[in-house]
Image (cartoon, rainbow, N blue to C red):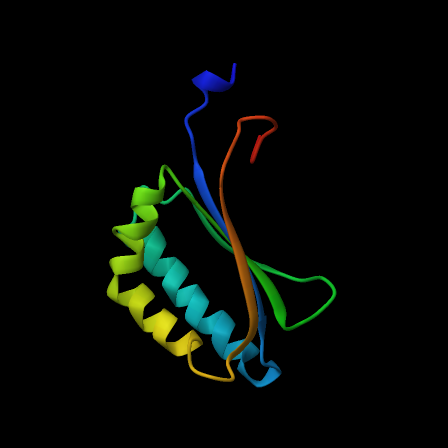
Length: 111
């Protein structure tokens, strides 16, 4: 049943990046993802998905055992703080929207 499924906290962020910053965005995000893989053992997923219809649109998928791991260590890490400062620079990200959620266990993320 659903009660046997551990709750996984997810964050989905859709971003549209200014065309002149797409390559730098992907490079910087890759470095951040490498940092997460090396230093955040509890982070379950940290993936950048590129739109198949627009070169400047992306979906970031983050999965954690709980919201707590998003807040600490992830959002406290120097790597994240530096990335957030860069992508918060006016003109880099043109659109951003997101949704946090909890997995239900109905269906599957991988098999």
